[in-house]
Amino acid sequence: MVVKALERACVEVSPEIVRRTILFVDYLKKVNETVNLTAITDDETIGTRHLQDSWMLHPYIPERSTMIDVGSGAGFPGLALKIIRPDLDVTLLDSVRKKTDFLESAIALLDLRHARAIHGRAEELGRDYSYRDHFDIAVARAVTALPTLLELALPLVKPGGLLIAMKGRDDETPESVRALEQLKGRLEEVVSYELPDTDHARSFVIVRKLLPTPSRYPRRMAAIKKNPL
Image (tube, rainbow, N blue to C red; front, side):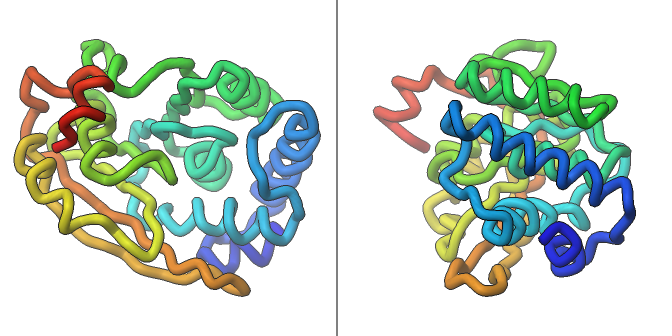
């Protein structure tokens, strides 16, 4: 399962990557028995829909980047990417305490350096100057509609950095023109692909941040929901 997913994602297979990935999957399945982390529990589907899907991003992430995974959940894509890319400095952000507790314990179990989990909300971190305009890369998978995600995640990215938003068949870019303009982002590329043995068409949207985030963003979540960009 692990080797097949690595090969399909064009990741070089090494004994250490395989060992850590198996350890991570086994731990995820064990914790998932008592904490709702994922509805996907069989090895083959975890390999395809979680691991391979996460690893598809790796060629687009520059070496030694600082990266934040917004809404990391069970660690996809952020923790899965850290396993194959030890050069990355990774922050895993989630608003659910049980999930960040799991992520912290998984980081310790896998003995991953330069990785941490933060319990918090993106719209709050985006106004904290310890994190605002700070990361080389932000990634997000199955979080929210792209215009809203841009407002939540792009403030965390430094000017010149990238946001990579993982989407399905619909990449949602036509609805995001105004958000990109307001948040000083530029659409760089949309990458489309399919996962094997599934009918799941996938895509990810790569956005370049051009300038610092205007001071009014991100707004409070109530305002974002009431009047999305």
